[in-house]
Amino acid sequence: MATSVSGVGSITSTGIGSGLDVAGILDKLMAVEERPLTMLKDAASTLNTRLSNVGKLQGYFSAMRDKANALTSPALWGGTTATSADAASVKVSPGSNAVAGSYAIPLQRLAPGQPVRSPPQASRA
Image (cartoon, rainbow, N blue to C red; front, side, top):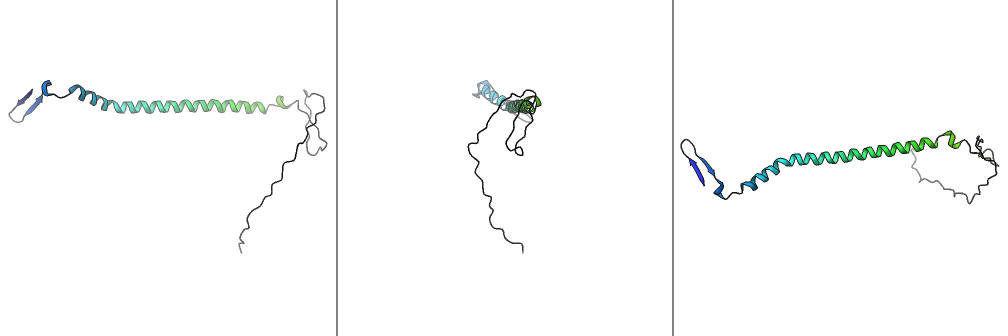
């Protein structure tokens, strides 16, 4: 039912009996008001996922660094010995853990040579 007040101006109010879906309108208005908050929450979730992935990468790189450092350890390579018929080519000094013995490393085949060519160049003259 509409209520009207006259005088200087008029105020009209549509009541519950007007047929308007007041609950639906309010729900839609609330959804519109909540949208920026929802977008911020989604953005925060995305950033947290990215931050977590960066942390994982840091862990992987740290583990790789530790493994690489272990490969440079003198203790790892100290027991390695080798001699060669061509001392100018290969020379390795024995370590304290070297196992006596003679080992042959057969050469299956030589790597093929690769010609290096460049196209003709124009003269600067």
